Amino acid sequence: MSVFASLVEHLADLLQPLFGAGAATAAIVLFTAFVRLLLHPLSRAAARGQKARAALQPRIAELRRKHARNPEKLREAVLDLHARANVSPLSGLAPSLLQAPAFFLLYHLFSSDTIGGRANGLLAHRLFAAPLGGRWADALGHGGPFGDAGLVYAGVFALVAVVAAFGCHLTKLMTAANPAVPVTGDGQPVPGAGAITRVMPFLPFLTLVTVAVVPLAAALYVVTSTTWSVAERAVLHR
Image (cartoon, rainbow, N blue to C red; front, side, top):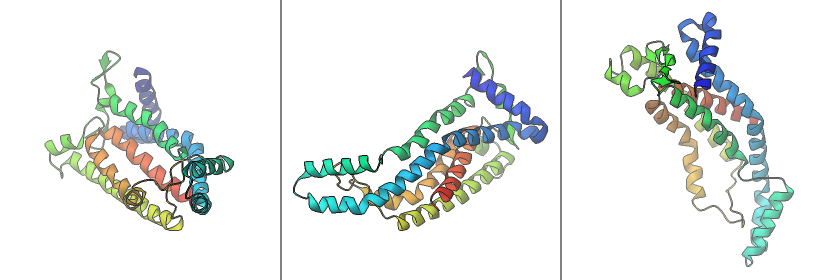
């Protein structure tokens, strides 16, 4: 943990001449972008996998008709089809799972009063009037939603809402272009897949809840990562 704190502090020191008091904020954004850049090859692979799974849907439907009375044969045929197409149903989870440790490191780093037995100096850094270690509830308790810190959060919420709205629109476009229904290993539709498909476009708005309850530093990670994800999807699925 202390090693990660030193990394953020040194990165903030390097950015100090360019960003002044916002150096720590810039360091978090840059760190997040670096994490997402490292995961970009996995995101590209996930996008290719999603397109490949969508392309397999007509053949899976044909297999379901062919082996309607033999579930075991259907399962084997579907698994063989995925293997020959080199498609994994779990490939899309890797980018999200692998970036989770970075988020929790930031969360813990800006939630701890001490790091390595000494005072956590990172808590003194701010985004304008809002401490990076503070939460929205703290801003509401000191000045209310239109206080100095409250207005910083209002700006962050507005940015998240814009990104979420664009992500929602993008998901609807992708679903309309590839209306594939997720299937299980035996080629049957995943239970509740229809409901999940209808809800999925609105999932980016859950980011608003996350930003409201985590330290501002972790919220900046979420905002930057979500913005990256939406832009990345727009490029990879164009």
